[in-house]
Length: 336
Image (cartoon, rainbow, N blue to C red; front, side, top):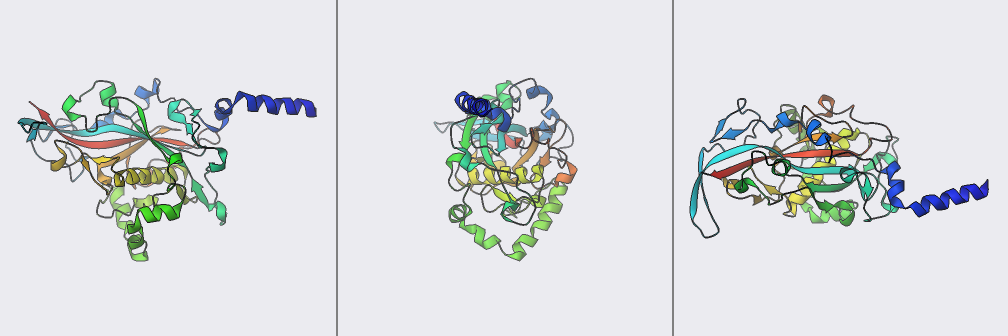
């Protein structure tokens, strides 16, 4: 009996992490037929051409979006080219939150050799001890779906030059993600917004997010999900899977904005080229869960209560990691 158990252990070890990942790393089936069936295509709207909505009344556009009809952009030689403004929501990024380091549901459930199980995360549990903290790693992918499918977008309106699905960032390589102290020293403004008064102001952001209007002025808040600072992977485990992972996906996006790896594509000054914005423009983004249970017909803004869209979106054992599509509002000057 002992010999059989020993041989089984040796066999499992010899097969390697790819086989063992089947238990700890699920397959989200992103690059499959679900690419068409489990994505909220109605979330593209409203589409505005020359400042006029061609679908709906345009009320779901961000308040800071461009209202211009015509525009003028210069090429690399400084020659101006007239055009008209095209604005819409675009699926631009994939953010996946996983407990197992290196696990990638977006890539079919493989485990990338980026870390080891000593950095294992978890959902935590609410028993008022050290286990009250949840921790997830994140992976950030370029996901220019409309360009990949050759839909709607002209060459001029490719905000960041990505043409295909591509891995952009992994938190396993970022020492600030699993260390709150390091995260604080890279974002020291967190000290200014850690007061009870600043935290109480997040109530207003939560109320505004319930109306699909997150408040960019309250940059330290993530609505009903909690505080945006620090830009690290630990969160109070009292929240649900949807709440915890949505907050951490927002923190990841905010951290990448701070480093210039994510840009602002909204507003009159962003018509010709995307701009570096060190503060997260919350109203520029919205999200829809793809895994474990997709929001195939809806989306949610940053800070919107999970009771309206996500408390039930968890499958025990096989669906305790999450994958989100990050929608980005894009104002673009398309040439005539």
